[in-house]
Figure 1 (spheres, rainbow, N blue to C red):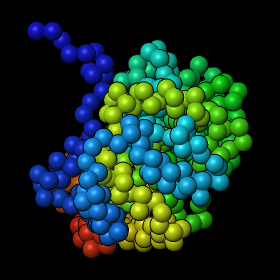
Figure 2: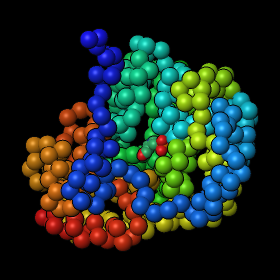
Figure 3: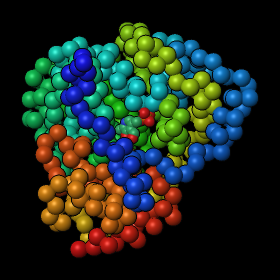
Length: 383
Ligand SMILES: Cc1ncc(COP(=O)(O)O)c(C=O)c1O
């Protein structure tokens, strides 16, 4: 028989999605894969029904329904202050997942190097490999996940084509400060590197931390491919809607990649989400406040367990140090925890480039009652 491709042997199945299956097997509360157990705003559900009734069943324009691009551009400008050319600077994708893949394939050739902070959202490694590029890593040092400017410089100087920035960060909950982003920007300029951002948690940031859009830093718009999503902002991870915003010359190439990968995201849902994008600022502020409450519920229980963790500044994940349990493998610990404690985490090693084995990641995009139920179970971990 012929063999399957070499490149598909270079990465594994997603451990995050695997932990969801483990949670289901043991009837555990699933704090692994980061999706909500609550519904999107009712106006969005109604808008989806209306879009179906209005006959929006056929392909939308491949780079996004015009109404959606217009609404996205308005929303982006509302939060970044930057004007967007809706016809030349935006592509609607099947989630940020596709946006990141498209961005990477658009700027990378086989043999190029892509820089990633480690720990990192696991898709980026596969995205780089599928683009023919080699990932190179810059450590973010626990517990506060700061980087060493010299280590960052060394990686930029090694001949990068692109650098991926996830901000606010999954899995660490870190929100990069403006000063940190400016260091990255200076290196991008000096070594002429594309920056691919993943800003899907842009609206889930906890005061006093603030989100700085990388593309708004002086001189950075021309070298930034900004990826984001509607999954997290509107609790619609299953709708598969995201986007890539970049300079017109980049989007001209990215549109082709997107078209041949997927043609487009689901047409009726593209129309429906316009209703969400037009919600007032109060919706976005309310979102951050709701997630702050969820965070505080989960952290309250973690405090009672005595386990060390890093307080999230944004996104909805917390990295918990499980080294006191003495497990040789965090995967083994995670299976044990799902089965015996009844709460499923993600083993931290799935995010780290090296052999880091001391952490699990929990997420709190859950109803308060789910978090309380999980928290009561977590108390069994008390040390
Ligand atoms: C950092 C990050 N990027 C991208 C995604 C996927 O986003 P989407 O649902 O828009 O594909 C996730 C989902 O968990 C994520 O955490």
